[in-house]
Length: 240
Image (cartoon, rainbow, N blue to C red; front, side, top):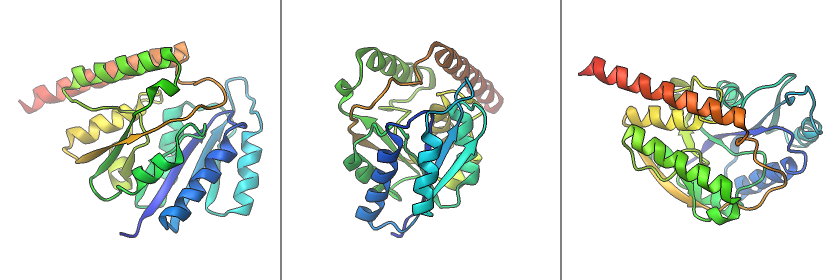
């Protein structure tokens, strides 16, 4: 199966990690023999209007490799908003989000991308959570199980390295700009009876703390999931 793939790579102040992440994806494309691809690196300024050099690194790499494209916003954007911009700019048949923090093991990416076409969604989950700090593991465990309880699923994970058909993504763009955008996409597509396969992946240590676990981000996640649950329940009543 010939694969046409857009890689969406959000990065906020990832100067220590972004080059490794991009070069890793380029190597994976070579390994899998995928020629029809693009890497859209989605960058912005932080809340203080600054960047740590990430944008300059991306632009340098894009000059050497035309399939690496810099999409920069000269202001602050939350992760969900970055992702929406990437989806709207993507030009390929399938899309996958790969973080610019270079956290994931490249062999896992190969396993994920090799499953493209087996289902509407390729959903990944972490099999070595001990590689992450304890507080992050606890939050992830509570988050996943809460979503399963609220929406009646048995998913292993919602925020992994997931592959979607571009047409499906554009029809299920998340309303939230918070870290919950990935869960919103998966839940919307599950509601549409889209098929999926779940793939185990490994993560590796990265330089710097996770930006998703800041208190203001967590509050937005709770608000987004609450809104989505109410929305689903209201639509269910309308159908019944």
